[in-house]
Amino acid sequence: MDLNQITIPSLDVEKATAFYKTLGLHLIVDAIPRYVRFECPDGNSTFSIHKVEALPKGNGITIYFEDDNLDDLVVKLQDKGIIFTQLPEDKSYLWREAHLQDLDGNNIIIFHAGKNRKNPPWRIN
Image (tube, rainbow, N blue to C red; front, side, top):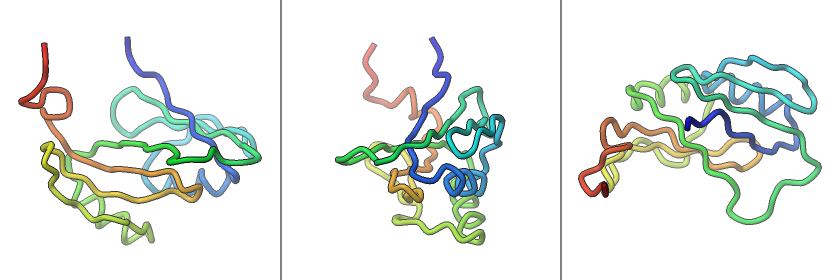
């Protein structure tokens, strides 16, 4: 089994589209104002956004994007006006992460974990 896509809600799909294009995703389906779908720059997963009248309550959604050159990517995104709530930091679980939010308040973690993403030292068989 492989993950095909994640779909998130947005109050303004057009603004959300611009934001995710700035992050580097490639638009492949444009049905603005109700729906868009992107290809991730690496791998086979896709990412889509659909229009809602109200956002879900609670902690919301957390989206993880991995990049081998995390620190360089963060600098490039900052140069494009992206604001991070946490700059790249090494975590105890062996990932390096930077945190931000999209325009609808969804949490985004851009990280680099390398082999530890799927094979941390504590992985069970």
